[in-house]
Amino acid sequence: MELWGGMLWALLSGPGRRGGTRGRAFSSWRPHRPQAGLSATELVSQWTAVFEKRGIPEARESSEYIVAHVLGAQTFQSLRPGLRSKPLTPWQLQCVQELSSRRLQRMPVQYILGEWDFCGLNLKMAPPVFIPRPETEELVEWVLEEVAQKSRAVGAQGGPLILEVGCGSGAISLSLLSQLPQSRVIAVDKAGAAISLARENAQRLQLQDRIRIAPLDVTLEGNWAHLLPWGPMDLLVSNPPYVFHQDMEQLAPEIRSYEDPAALDGGEKGMDVIVHLLALAPRLLKDSGSLFLEVDPRHPELVSSWLQSRPGLSLELVAVRKDFCGRPRFLHIQRSGPHGGCPVDTWPAPQPAGVPG
Ligand SMILES: C[S@@+](CC[C@H](N)C(=O)[O-])C[C@H]1O[C@@H](n2cnc3c(N)ncnc32)[C@H](O)[C@@H]1O
Image (cartoon, rainbow, N blue to C red; front, side):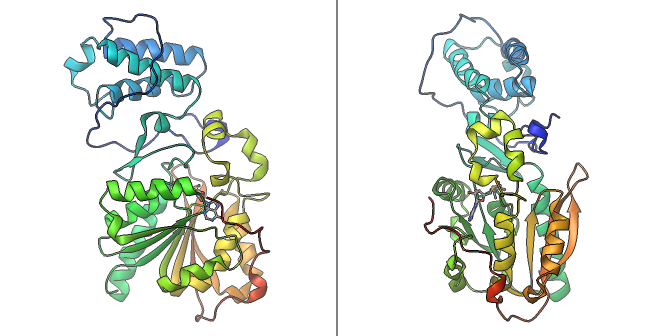
């Protein structure tokens, strides 16, 4: 699997997809070379060759997803053999042409299809909202393991109250809700496009009754106070923007041209939002509540020393987990002391006013 721009984010390595979607209408038609009589298999080969020639990553997977989507399936492998060898209609050929031309412009397949699977949930995708990556499923699994372990250990009543900061499309929050039927989630994001998409996905999955999705920028001073009325949280989860600013230019064109840079750019050391989450955690978490973070492999050490120099926060880095590539990418941080609020001088420097989105 190719690693775009040196990141771990192999955008096409999503989980096995379930169910089926129908082909959809496409707004703009473009004249194209006649391809009448071509079967799905032939079309995949033809577009794979075009993509390869033009240096498009994951050429075969891209063409398979596009052709399958136009034929109303989620994967090419799930198409009946009869459908694979049947000639496409002129309308279907036109749709494949239209979608493939977007791929030639390096649009990620997830945006082209307008949907993607995460933890077995089918989510609507729309630029520039961040596309959930496969490794984030490992973060969700870890959180689920911890919830199960805790409820066994202390016999917790009811489900956990969870706060997700930077919910994007809603991937993490909605996966947790779907696996924890008694849980409730507060999901915030500073981007208006993310809030709208997360709300749409919550409705689409019929999970809207147990989630509140609100616009909020956690780096703005005092904004955390808006979260207090929801009550102390059992869990805080986040896949924040954590890319080191100087690495942003090395990201693949798919990422740089289509995804919101504010979803990725974590500032000089990738810690700009992370430090706000660390300062927020003691104020919002219950006693021995947990913060789970997805980070860059350089962050476990940076976060550990940041916390050690701020003992007043009463936060302890209790575990670090590796992703499927063996790189340390997930942090479990626990509130270790009594609830005393966060000393004022541990709050990071205020950001410019105004809540984007
Ligand atoms: C890496 S994306 C993660 C999205 C989603 N949780 C996922 O894993 O697919 C980070 C998200 O954090 C949001 N974000 C960035 N800065 C933020 C801030 N200061 N306050 C709240 N949300 C922020 C971005 O808009 C983006 O949706």
